[in-house]
Length: 83
Image (tube, rainbow, N blue to C red; front, side):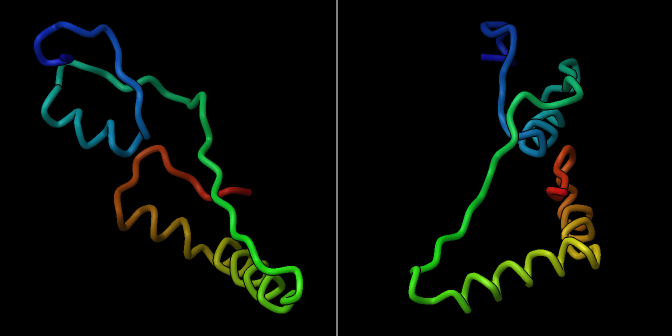
């Protein structure tokens, strides 16, 4: 629809739009975001050690830069690690 002029705009995850833009060079990506995807993990209440481990692991990979490096390696334009 974009290619045929049947649509005025399209919304998707920023990195997917950046991949599509290769085929649609006349289109531009607007900076910013109106949606932040949130991911969560759940653990049984009777297993607090799992939740504690997961929390420490996530904080560690955020702190040591692993997430930013993974985003850069995957060329995920517009993606960022949660603060």
